[in-house]
Length: 307
Ligand SMILES: Nc1ncnc2c1ncn2[C@@H]1O[C@H](COP(=O)(O)OP(=O)(O)OP(=O)(O)O)[C@@H](O)[C@H]1O
Image (cartoon, rainbow, N blue to C red; front, side):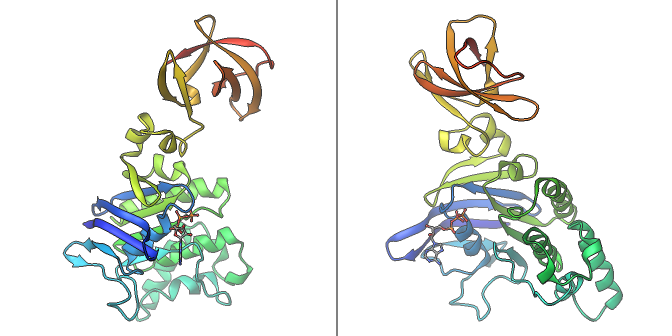
């Protein structure tokens, strides 16, 4: 449905921020775009939405080409919605009215019902009459998401959608929002640093580095076999180490502390992580991180087994 081909864009001449980006997304599919700060995630969302005039390449939704501001008085495709990092809400208007403003006015009963449904999606029913200016950053972010959903877009573009929302709310909002999108068959692209946005909720994932796709696949495939240290770091503290002369990438949970083995390491530090400890160790002059169900005295030598 969405076809992005050879997408190339530069804010300044000869300094492309996106370089030959290619990907497809089907109807109702969810894509997660990950990458370090400044790698071009927001720029990619803006380009797909139609806010930029591309230097090269095309974006198609079905057989309709997405064109930039040079071709539209009001840039941005009508049947897409884009939730930027700044939410562009109406501060002196209530939460409910901010959402309802984007619904057709000629069916007041329908508008009321839909506003109620969207308030439930963002878990803010009790805030319906509160003015947006009196909300926290995270609450405003949730209102911006509801507003984008008001007209049921065909493609929703979310830029760091849960960045300002606390963990408790974030987990529940993610579950509700992504199942709502699946139910309504709305395609979605999420730009994020947070692998939790990808692992349980995305059908596909791309990783950007310096404006180029450096890895793509299902979140499971990228997690199980990260192509590089860069890709692995979005999921966990990854160890890039040499064992018996061979370079390997291992997550902390893939290295086990065992009774005895030829692989020895010395404990440097312990970090409490809740239901486990992350242990920093020296392994043949390389710093590694290993999970353990208990803390270990600094200086102790342990034996390791690698999966
Ligand atoms: N309007 C602009 N004019 C010039 N350069 C820009 C503009 N917007 C972004 N850039 C530059 O383009 C690059 C990519 O920025 P972008 O916002 O797409 O990155 P990002 O991956 O979304 O970063 P973050 O995760 O920090 O939001 C950065 O180097 C940034 O400084």
